[in-house]
Image 1: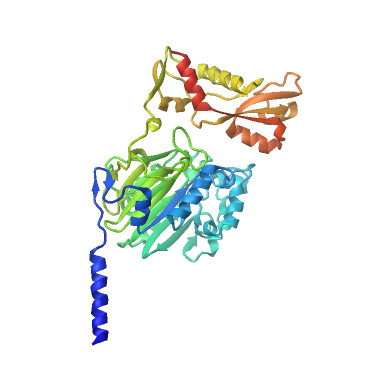
Image 2: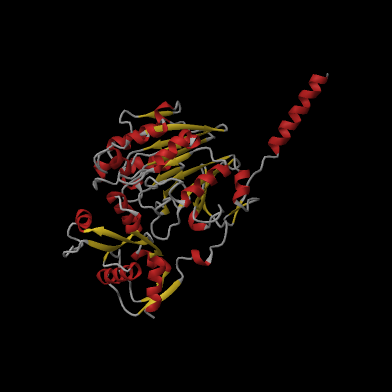
Length: 461
């Protein structure tokens, strides 16, 4: 009798707990009962992360990467997907040491082979598939849940977490050569089709397809028939290379189909995109992905606003969010000043060179504008058309031989033995590593492109 009573009690407890499972409501872009990132962590069945375009950087190199690593650990993410350009030829590439030393990352990082990997391990960025050894860095060949193709750079992983299966298909699509049919082969597309068609999607399956891409969204390179398969079977479609987080909307799929995103960059974001990574939380009822681009430059992890957060109901709608208000400094359409005339790209070249020369107190400047500016009000967003990366300005002192080896005829030597050059941190870091410049030849001004350009615009009023 006691055994029967014990069984009945256990049955009642089980059915009661199942009946009390939280069912989330989505109203006006918010999730019922979830107001903070910590409450989202607690309410989710599990979470995982996605990152790209770190170019060899690790927690040792950039605070944003260190923040990401800490936040991934604190939030209990189960694995992390990489979308390529995880190494950079000629740079320190401390990321490789990090992957060896950090057991969690070594066992749970799923990298993509892209142009950065091809260049680092092979002849150049267009050396198709040469970047395959990045998979060896995390012993991917030894994981029983991963099937790697004979080309050794594309694979299909089935990642099981708490009764769910995340199906991850990693494709090779380098942004070099600049011929899409060569960079993203028909064989790769057929492999994607074969894997997707082989998956019998169940009630706890999540399907993700990823490729680095050349111009930002690889789905544009598929045939209509191939695209329809992706739109029908996938839940998340990941691209990278532009260093800019954004969602792509295909006509007719504004609020349905997979969530198609470019994953930005954790250490080299472009334009006004923050330093960041993607975090995905899985809710059980309804079966939902909460996808956010986490700003890793902030003091702490937080819920994001509409531009950087989406709710994807599996088998259902894609919803816009309203998790928090946009801060004034995050408003890209705020007016920072006016200019009295049009400035062509060539005229802005002269302007930005003058800015660099003055700030760095240098003899020469290696910088150019991306675009010009139109007469009238200038928004913060427009500043990023001129300086898409907001680099710090360096002053490097190079020998005449060093100038010739790097710049050839772009910077004249004119009989000088040493030349001071104002240059962006992106190009400057490369030169420092390439020429093994001593510290006394390097000055980091601490001044960055966008604030300086904003000052210049205000001075035109």
